[in-house]
Structure formats: C-alpha cells, structure tokens
Amino acid sequence: MSQLALSNLLLVLGALAYLVSGIFIVRALRAAGARAPVGLRAIALLGFVLHFSGVVTEMFMGDLIHFGFGMAVSAMLLIAVAITIIESFVHRINALTGAVVLVAAAGSVLPVVFPGTTYPTEEWSLLFRVHLLVALAAYSFMTIAVVQAIFLMRMDRMLKNPVLAASDAGLLSNMPSLMTMERILFRIIACGFACLTMVLILGGFATMQAHGVAYVWDHKTVMTWLAWAVFAVLLAGRYCFGWRKKKALSWFWAGVFVLAAAYLIYRFIIEVFMA
Image (tube, rainbow, N blue to C red):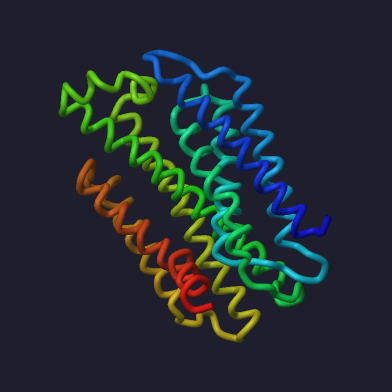
C-alpha cells in the first residue's frame, strides 16, 4: 500500500470513529439531565489517533510537504478535537464535545478530496512551521467558538420562545446557563485572538527571514490583520463596554468570515475553480 493510500485510509477510519462517537454523544444527551458515557471519549480518542496519523502521513512524504485547503481544514479540526477531548477530562462530556467531533468527522477527510500543493521540505523553515502551527491553533479555537456561538443563539431563542423550549428538552438542557455559555464563548475567542496575535508576530519574523521585509501585503496578510482588528474591537467592546448577544455576535460572525476568507475560502476557490 502506498503512503498516500495509507494516509487516506487512516483519515477515513478516523472520520468513522468520530462519527460514531459524535452521534452517540448527541443521542445520549437528548434527555434532560442525561450524561454521555465516558467510554464514548475513548472512541473519539481513537478517532483522534487515526486522524493524527493520517495527517502526519499525508503531509510529510519524504522530502516533500503536502498542504492546501483540505489539509488546512483537517489539521485545524485535529487541534479542535484535541482541545475538546482535553476539556472533557476536566468537565463532563457535553454537547459541544459531540458537535465538534461530528464536524471533525466531515472535515477530517477533506485531504482525500483536496490534496493541495506539494512543497520541498527546505522551503519550510522551523520558524515558518511554528507560525503555521499557531495559525492552525487560532483557526481551531475560532471553530470551537463558532459551535459554541450556534448553541448560544439556539438557547437564546429557546428562552424567548416557550413552544420551542418545550419541544427541545435535550442537548441544550445539559448546557450551562446562557450567561455562563456567553462567558465561555468569549474565553474561547480570547484564546483564538491570542493565537492570532502570535501568528502576525511570527509571520513578520518568518517573512523577514525569507524575503527581507516584515510583511508582504498580499491578500492573506491584509485579511488576517483585518480579522485581528475585528476581534480586537469585539473583545474591547465586551470587556470595556459589556457588549452582549446580538451586537457581540454580529462582530464575532464578521471576524469569523474575514478570518476564513484570509486563507480557507481563498484557497478553496484557488484549488477548485482555478486549478
């Protein structure tokens, strides 16, 4: 079996483990006050190991590195799953864990469909690799924040609509209060913002090392700085002026869109429509 075939097999098996774990976590939490069996974490952990092995096997092939839209999404979700699994050891398994694992089940296999571009290993310096890892971590935190924001919006609608609340006594009944979920959301955003700040700092050093200037003002750099500015305003509004609910979420979704456009959306268009 070739290395590429092996990596694809590992990614598919990892996705299946995620799918099983995610479905059973969500089903277990359907009843009010229910708890998901701890054993489901082991299935998610198995999926993570297979996913990690698949990403490493496909990204690094001898003297070549494969990277692109599919690998970026898969690696980003790999880190997101790692964060949620670690969190599940501190707190009980919740709906956020199940949702992130289900998202990972769909996104982890994208390198099979979008293999990306091949780069010589020597083109990626150690500094650039650290920069890339921190960038993936930033996207991972924001992905978890997106899932949390969706749950937050759903809970807010439930509280305003008794009929809707009566029809859904499952997943959201096992979540913390609205205020607590909002605090958790902004902690996740703050972690993502800290990573994004490091991305811009390390990116400046990496570009200086490669090109002799701190920043090359291409699409990716401009959009990343713009996303950083949007999240900076959001966090300042939250902690200085108490922004909540619709106003805060409007800024959050704007920041997520700009950040996605900085690389993921742009790279998807390049690989699918301009290949």
